Length: 171
Ligand SMILES: O=P(O)(O)OC[C@H]1O[C@H](OP(=O)(O)OP(=O)(O)O)[C@H](O)[C@@H]1O
Ligand code: HPA
Ligand SMILES: [Mg+2]
Image 1 (cartoon, rainbow, N blue to C red):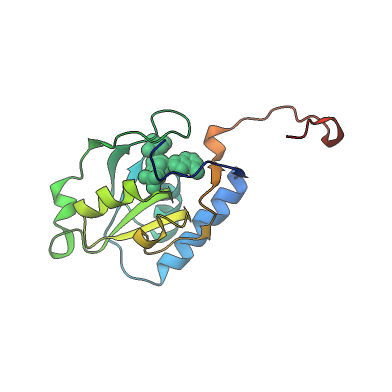
Image 2: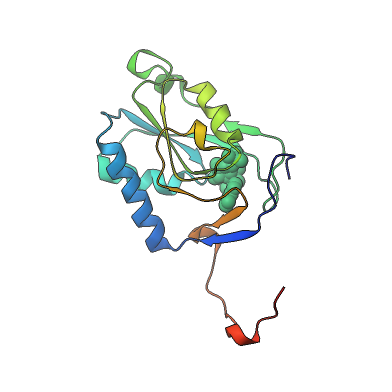
């Protein structure tokens, strides 16, 4: 875990339904903010909200940028850029990504957002969820959760048996 990462005391599980609703809410909010020429989604987490936003706003030019940092579960390591943005996309709108929408599932410490913003300084950065440390790097988001919350996305979860509340150990 990086030095500034908080221990994750709380859990915020998100179902597919809730994620779809929240990503659609993001599309609504973005719809009044300009004519987007392309989406750059940050893989892999940004792929799902990008598909929903692209469908709602009729955006058909979709590019990816690959950044990985959480190599182990909840542990942030060194940042690795695995795929850069196509120069054709960077050049849109007169250069530096003007008119481009960058989409990710969430911003946590802001480390990922900082790297991608450097690549496209004039782009609009949007996420579905935001934690306080990363929030200043995002132009538009839907829901804020506390820094010590871990968000569980539906693609990372499966159905499993839950013991009755009165049989759970407290601790
Ligand atoms: O604000 P930060 O502290 O940088 O964290 C946010 C990033 O972490 C997660 O991606 P991850 O690196 O785990 O890769 P993934 O999208 O492939 O799961 C998430 O999808 C964001 O991209
Ligand atoms: O809270 C989180 N949930 C899932 N992936 C993440 N990557 C950084 N923070 C998170
Ligand atoms: Mg990611």
